[in-house]
Length: 237
Image 1 (cartoon, rainbow, N blue to C red):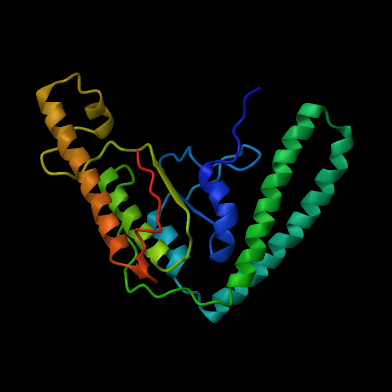
Image 2 (cartoon, rainbow, N blue to C red):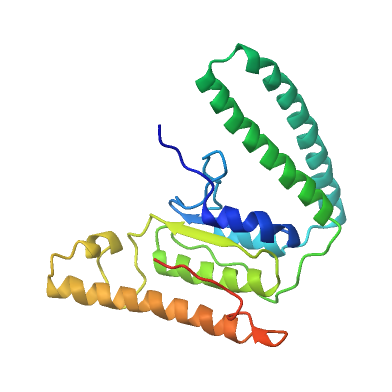
């Protein structure tokens, strides 16, 4: 009988997201279990940081924009058809199946809202950030992944492309930290072995350095009488 409800990031994005090109940016390295819709459906995360970078900052040419606008129009017509067809089902379904159908409707409506918003923003140039997209790396290499996510978060908030970002990771076996030769998950089950504790300390210290750099980047961005750091809330675990 238990079910998820809208998560905190989506709750905040429902208000803040109307001011930006993207309501929210949901990122994942293996798993992001933190972002949920009103109906308890998981928000599909972007698993490639380079793709997320392109979505935020890569400008489409005139031909590409025309193609995207055609695809948006086609997407909206398909959604209208799907909603009409699904609506005819409602009277023939059990209460439980009606609840499931309502979840489906919610997902369709959310998709429709994204399509409408995408169409509105197609004529607004994306911000120029003077940064290159992240180079390819092993998906389970958590430190490089974390560094790229921090850099992307800084650029996204600085340009006000979105005001809400969530990131979850599960793939974490490869570690690019000097002196660390054991996977992160294995180190977390250290059994108080001195060698593992030392490696875990080096790894956790690197996490804190990356987080500290992100705070420093935020602090360097002035917004009116304050800084971006003053106006940002970070939950890290």
